[in-house]
Length: 404
Length: 230
Image 1 (cartoon, each protein chain N blue to C red):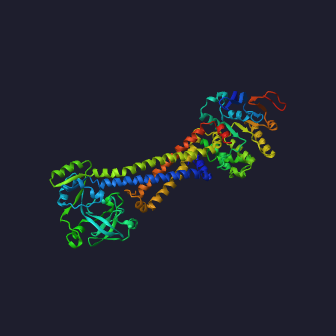
Image 2: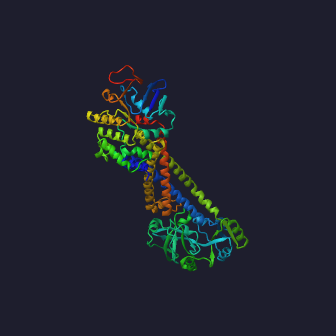
Image 3: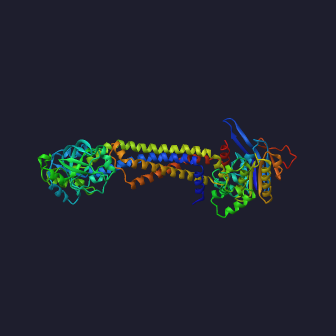
């Protein structure tokens, strides 16, 4: 290791209170920055998930209900509209279509889900073809048996937290007279989906028709087909479907994305504003502290220059100290931020009713590293200003001023 | 050889008033000289020493070093000159408090990036000469005033400088420590090093082969009977 770095390290180690000031300010800056960026990242992730799900490039619904295509997704309103299931096969044959996912809107059911009584919209989906819900589930590796359900984040009420963090918890919900096992929970979307219960299509069809159970849906019918097209081909596929005369309306998913974007925009702007404020504030904070510390060491700096250290050498030594302190402090700050958020994520998701999809550990590590680099950079830049001021003096002046 | 020619150093007291710390002072220091700069407090002794060691720049006048106008040198060249040719000892505590004695002594080499493991042997020899071998791992706060001053002397010598500039090196020390340090300075001068000593003590000034007397920032030519007077 370069001997200048060793001297810098010794200075940090042996002046523990001075270093603690600097590292502490970097740690606070890193913690705040980590938390702010973490939330923005979570929101961005939820938007991405939203664009893959709600904005499945196209939504195909029966003729005449095109204006209400997104009602279930956005507002949680289950409307009884149906079209033949053969529509799915026809659409699937279009070469520019990558995936299709049928859903069947059943009805709003009053029941008790995880100990919470309420009215829950129930939707049937096909787990084999689904490319939408899987972007929102807490545990991606789970498979679904016939009588398993996935619930929205609010559908479980207070017990949602329990499900989220405990893979082995067993909760049941009664739907149409049948007990269903709650197999998975969706991340909050901030929309109607949060109250929805999703059951398998085959289970819904099996239960349908029995008057006692209160579920009566026409045979071989579906309510909506979510379509994923090849990139940039949504308009083309839309026209292809319309040309097929399937007696359907085709809505573009981008409209739904715009709704989500519109909902989330003020929060995003606020978060970015917060991040900017954090960066500026932490810069000033480090600058103020370093300014005081450098003033305290003015004589020492003069001495170093008397010994033959050129300005550039003194810069390197002092900025190396700022860098090491910033690095140590920001590592602790980012780590504390990560521990705080990951350890309490279920609680945070419960109390912050925002569409958030928390990043996995790898992304969290990436955010932590980015924050560490940013705060270290800020520390070095902030230290540069007071250091530069003192190094512009003649060495003798620094030594004499430092005597005061 | 160092030649200070018509050196003036001024400070602004306020918008109207300027104070001259030095006023057209000239002096030439030959290689191997032991020049004692004497005068009362505020006479400009330390400022002159700082200018001679390129730690400060004169407001007017020229500093000639080996025939070159050092006022025109860049910061890095001035730093290089200080690193390779000069050693400084100051009256105030000048050791870096976070480094132990050995690290302080080796610091000039570390700062300019010329440190090699064998330099430790040289540092050991110098520490032995100044009587601090037992304190090589002590921190400045663990040393007495005299020991700190001797450690600073050792640090000043690690680069084997041609010129040693000492500003009141015995200030606030007891007689025994003062004699010890003066003995070291005389010894090094006899071994060929040029010494510039600032002191207000006439007895110590007698150690020099030349004396420059300053009064209110000017060369005092009123005459002295205890040595050569400029």
